[in-house]
Length: 115
Length: 115
Image (cartoon, rainbow over all chains, first blue to last red; front, side, top):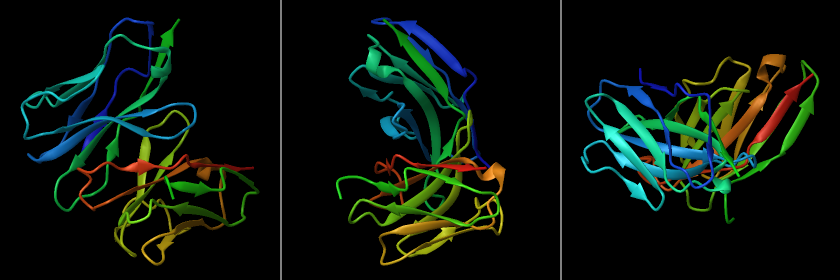
Protein backbone atom coordinates (compact mmCIF):
# COMPACT_ATOMS: atom_id res chain seq x y z
CA UNK A 1 0.00 0.00 0.00
CA UNK A 2 1.14 3.52 -0.68
CA UNK A 3 1.67 6.14 2.02
CA UNK A 4 2.23 9.88 2.03
CA UNK A 5 3.90 11.67 4.93
CA UNK A 6 3.94 15.37 5.69
CA UNK A 7 6.07 15.95 8.76
CA UNK A 8 5.33 19.66 9.24
CA UNK A 9 1.87 20.13 10.79
CA UNK A 10 2.21 23.92 10.81
CA UNK A 11 4.45 26.55 9.27
CA UNK A 12 4.45 30.31 9.11
CA UNK A 13 6.43 32.77 7.04
CA UNK A 14 6.54 36.50 6.45
CA UNK A 15 4.83 37.84 3.38
CA UNK A 16 7.11 37.97 0.31
CA UNK A 17 9.43 35.32 1.70
CA UNK A 18 10.00 31.84 0.29
CA UNK A 19 8.75 28.74 2.07
CA UNK A 20 9.24 25.04 1.40
CA UNK A 21 6.76 22.35 2.44
CA UNK A 22 8.03 18.79 2.76
CA UNK A 23 6.45 15.57 1.56
CA UNK A 24 7.74 12.03 1.40
CA UNK A 25 5.93 9.03 0.02
CA UNK A 26 6.28 5.33 -0.34
CA UNK A 27 5.21 3.10 -3.19
CA UNK A 28 6.62 0.08 -4.93
CA UNK A 29 5.32 1.28 -8.27
CA UNK A 30 7.45 3.05 -10.84
CA UNK A 31 4.75 5.06 -12.59
CA UNK A 32 2.67 7.48 -10.59
CA UNK A 33 1.60 11.09 -10.22
CA UNK A 34 2.21 13.47 -7.37
CA UNK A 35 0.11 16.48 -6.50
CA UNK A 36 0.00 19.41 -4.15
CA UNK A 37 -3.48 20.60 -3.22
CA UNK A 38 -4.37 23.77 -1.36
CA UNK A 39 -7.37 23.94 0.97
CA UNK A 40 -8.28 27.47 2.07
CA UNK A 41 -10.81 28.10 4.88
CA UNK A 42 -13.60 27.73 2.33
CA UNK A 43 -12.77 23.97 2.43
CA UNK A 44 -12.56 23.71 -1.36
CA UNK A 45 -9.53 21.70 -2.46
CA UNK A 46 -7.62 23.38 -5.28
CA UNK A 47 -4.92 21.75 -7.34
CA UNK A 48 -1.67 23.72 -7.07
CA UNK A 49 0.75 21.64 -9.09
CA UNK A 50 1.24 18.11 -10.43
CA UNK A 51 4.29 16.01 -11.31
CA UNK A 52 4.50 12.89 -13.42
CA UNK A 53 7.02 10.45 -11.97
CA UNK A 54 8.52 9.65 -15.36
CA UNK A 55 9.47 13.29 -15.90
CA UNK A 56 12.80 14.30 -14.46
CA UNK A 57 12.13 18.01 -14.86
CA UNK A 58 10.55 19.61 -11.82
CA UNK A 59 7.10 21.09 -12.39
CA UNK A 60 6.61 24.84 -12.06
CA UNK A 61 3.45 26.94 -11.91
CA UNK A 62 4.15 30.64 -11.51
CA UNK A 63 5.30 31.12 -7.89
CA UNK A 64 4.96 27.42 -7.11
CA UNK A 65 7.61 24.84 -7.91
CA UNK A 66 8.49 21.37 -6.73
CA UNK A 67 11.69 19.55 -5.92
CA UNK A 68 11.02 15.98 -7.00
CA UNK A 69 13.61 13.45 -5.87
CA UNK A 70 12.39 10.10 -7.12
CA UNK A 71 15.11 7.96 -5.60
CA UNK A 72 14.56 9.56 -2.22
CA UNK A 73 10.76 9.51 -2.69
CA UNK A 74 10.60 13.15 -1.80
CA UNK A 75 8.30 15.80 -3.27
CA UNK A 76 8.61 19.23 -1.68
CA UNK A 77 6.70 22.37 -2.63
CA UNK A 78 8.39 25.76 -2.80
CA UNK A 79 6.30 28.90 -2.69
CA UNK A 80 8.19 32.01 -3.74
CA UNK A 81 7.21 35.59 -2.96
CA UNK A 82 4.51 34.30 -0.61
CA UNK A 83 1.23 36.20 -0.47
CA UNK A 84 -1.49 36.48 2.16
CA UNK A 85 -3.78 34.47 -0.09
CA UNK A 86 -1.41 31.52 0.18
CA UNK A 87 -2.59 30.97 3.77
CA UNK A 88 -4.22 27.54 3.69
CA UNK A 89 -3.80 23.85 4.40
CA UNK A 90 -1.55 22.18 1.86
CA UNK A 91 -1.87 18.49 1.08
CA UNK A 92 0.54 16.28 -0.79
CA UNK A 93 -1.07 13.41 -2.69
CA UNK A 94 0.01 10.33 -4.63
CA UNK A 95 -1.84 8.60 -7.44
CA UNK A 96 -0.73 5.31 -8.87
CA UNK A 97 -1.11 4.96 -12.59
CA UNK A 98 -3.35 2.60 -14.47
CA UNK A 99 -6.01 0.88 -12.50
CA UNK A 100 -5.61 2.29 -9.02
CA UNK A 101 -7.51 5.51 -9.10
CA UNK A 102 -7.57 6.67 -5.53
CA UNK A 103 -5.54 9.64 -4.46
CA UNK A 104 -3.67 8.99 -1.21
CA UNK A 105 -3.23 12.15 0.83
CA UNK A 106 -0.84 13.22 3.55
CA UNK A 107 -2.12 14.78 6.77
CA UNK A 108 -1.44 18.29 5.55
CA UNK A 109 0.60 21.33 6.52
CA UNK A 110 -1.14 24.45 7.79
CA UNK A 111 0.67 27.41 6.26
CA UNK A 112 0.17 30.92 7.60
CA UNK A 113 1.52 33.96 5.77
CA UNK A 114 2.21 36.78 8.19
CA UNK A 115 1.66 40.34 6.95
CA UNK B 1 -22.95 23.08 -13.32
CA UNK B 2 -19.87 25.23 -13.04
CA UNK B 3 -18.33 23.16 -10.28
CA UNK B 4 -18.85 20.21 -7.99
CA UNK B 5 -21.78 20.91 -5.72
CA UNK B 6 -22.38 19.20 -2.38
CA UNK B 7 -25.39 19.39 -0.14
CA UNK B 8 -26.06 20.05 2.58
CA UNK B 9 -23.13 22.27 3.46
CA UNK B 10 -23.54 21.45 7.12
CA UNK B 11 -25.51 18.73 8.85
CA UNK B 12 -26.08 18.14 12.53
CA UNK B 13 -27.72 14.85 13.40
CA UNK B 14 -28.45 12.81 16.47
CA UNK B 15 -26.53 9.63 17.13
CA UNK B 16 -28.34 6.68 15.62
CA UNK B 17 -30.06 8.59 12.83
CA UNK B 18 -29.42 8.00 9.13
CA UNK B 19 -28.02 10.76 6.91
CA UNK B 20 -27.71 11.25 3.17
CA UNK B 21 -25.03 13.41 1.62
CA UNK B 22 -25.36 14.49 -1.98
CA UNK B 23 -22.77 15.26 -4.64
CA UNK B 24 -23.45 16.82 -8.05
CA UNK B 25 -20.31 16.42 -10.16
CA UNK B 26 -19.28 18.61 -13.05
CA UNK B 27 -21.33 17.74 -16.11
CA UNK B 28 -19.58 15.16 -18.26
CA UNK B 29 -17.20 13.97 -15.57
CA UNK B 30 -17.26 10.18 -15.51
CA UNK B 31 -15.19 9.64 -12.37
CA UNK B 32 -16.48 10.54 -8.92
CA UNK B 33 -14.77 10.18 -5.56
CA UNK B 34 -15.78 10.46 -1.91
CA UNK B 35 -13.27 11.34 0.78
CA UNK B 36 -13.59 11.93 4.50
CA UNK B 37 -11.56 14.55 6.33
CA UNK B 38 -11.51 14.32 10.09
CA UNK B 39 -10.22 17.19 12.23
CA UNK B 40 -6.45 17.50 11.89
CA UNK B 41 -6.26 14.58 9.49
CA UNK B 42 -5.62 14.17 5.82
CA UNK B 43 -8.18 12.92 3.37
CA UNK B 44 -9.33 9.36 3.81
CA UNK B 45 -10.50 7.65 0.63
CA UNK B 46 -13.98 6.16 0.85
CA UNK B 47 -15.18 5.12 -2.60
CA UNK B 48 -14.67 5.75 -6.28
CA UNK B 49 -17.21 5.56 -9.13
CA UNK B 50 -16.54 5.17 -12.80
CA UNK B 51 -19.88 5.91 -14.40
CA UNK B 52 -22.47 4.22 -12.17
CA UNK B 53 -20.25 1.39 -11.01
CA UNK B 54 -17.92 1.44 -8.03
CA UNK B 55 -14.69 -0.45 -8.83
CA UNK B 56 -13.20 0.44 -5.48
CA UNK B 57 -15.24 0.47 -2.28
CA UNK B 58 -12.31 -0.46 -0.12
CA UNK B 59 -12.34 2.74 1.87
CA UNK B 60 -15.85 2.47 3.27
CA UNK B 61 -15.21 2.16 7.03
CA UNK B 62 -18.12 -0.11 7.88
CA UNK B 63 -21.32 -1.61 6.52
CA UNK B 64 -23.17 1.44 7.85
CA UNK B 65 -21.70 3.35 4.91
CA UNK B 66 -23.02 2.97 1.38
CA UNK B 67 -22.97 5.02 -1.78
CA UNK B 68 -24.66 5.00 -5.12
CA UNK B 69 -24.50 6.94 -8.31
CA UNK B 70 -27.32 7.19 -10.82
CA UNK B 71 -27.32 8.27 -14.44
CA UNK B 72 -23.57 8.69 -14.32
CA UNK B 73 -24.15 11.92 -12.49
CA UNK B 74 -25.43 12.55 -8.95
CA UNK B 75 -24.04 10.46 -6.12
CA UNK B 76 -25.42 9.90 -2.65
CA UNK B 77 -23.39 8.78 0.34
CA UNK B 78 -25.58 7.27 3.06
CA UNK B 79 -24.53 6.70 6.64
CA UNK B 80 -26.88 4.57 8.70
CA UNK B 81 -27.13 4.64 12.48
CA UNK B 82 -24.62 7.47 12.73
CA UNK B 83 -21.98 7.41 15.45
CA UNK B 84 -19.99 10.29 16.93
CA UNK B 85 -16.85 9.08 15.19
CA UNK B 86 -18.60 9.71 11.87
CA UNK B 87 -18.29 13.44 12.51
CA UNK B 88 -16.08 14.84 9.76
CA UNK B 89 -16.10 16.80 6.53
CA UNK B 90 -17.13 14.63 3.59
CA UNK B 91 -15.59 15.77 0.33
CA UNK B 92 -16.63 14.79 -3.17
CA UNK B 93 -14.50 15.17 -6.28
CA UNK B 94 -15.00 14.49 -9.97
CA UNK B 95 -12.75 14.24 -12.99
CA UNK B 96 -13.08 13.74 -16.72
CA UNK B 97 -11.50 10.31 -16.73
CA UNK B 98 -10.63 7.51 -14.38
CA UNK B 99 -6.98 8.28 -14.85
CA UNK B 100 -6.48 11.23 -12.56
CA UNK B 101 -3.68 12.70 -14.59
CA UNK B 102 -6.48 15.06 -15.44
CA UNK B 103 -7.40 17.41 -12.65
CA UNK B 104 -9.81 16.31 -9.94
CA UNK B 105 -12.23 19.06 -8.95
CA UNK B 106 -13.49 19.07 -5.38
CA UNK B 107 -16.70 20.33 -3.87
CA UNK B 108 -16.75 22.37 -0.70
CA UNK B 109 -17.74 19.41 1.38
CA UNK B 110 -20.44 18.57 3.88
CA UNK B 111 -19.54 19.07 7.52
CA UNK B 112 -21.31 16.33 9.46
CA UNK B 113 -21.66 16.62 13.20
CA UNK B 114 -23.14 13.74 15.16
CA UNK B 115 -24.34 14.71 18.62
